[in-house]
Length: 96
Image 1 (tube, rainbow, N blue to C red):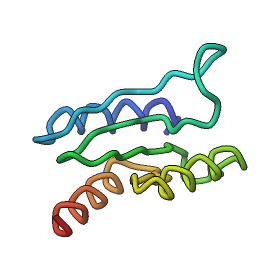
Image 2: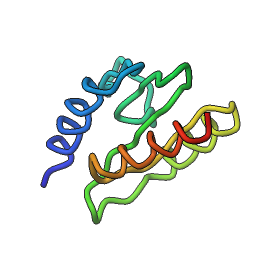
Image 3: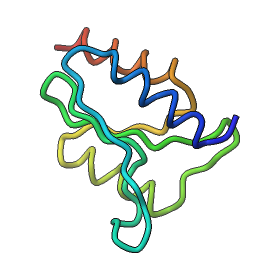
Image 4: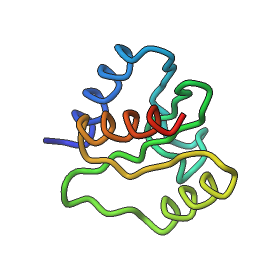
């Protein structure tokens, strides 16, 4: 499965999640390099997902961006499937 297909599947799933607003962050010359693929607000929390294939690796810039989000008390994750996103959100729900 291609990364773009995983992103689409995750976004489709997120539209079904109550109290969740999400969007695909588009890169390019007008975007900010290193920003995770999917940004969402879930139950009042900032959450970012960097989507990779099973064999995909984070770049140094992506690692640094995820670290900065976490330092700012946001949540950021590398994910490879809808199932991982579901588990993350379920875990966040339990911690509320």
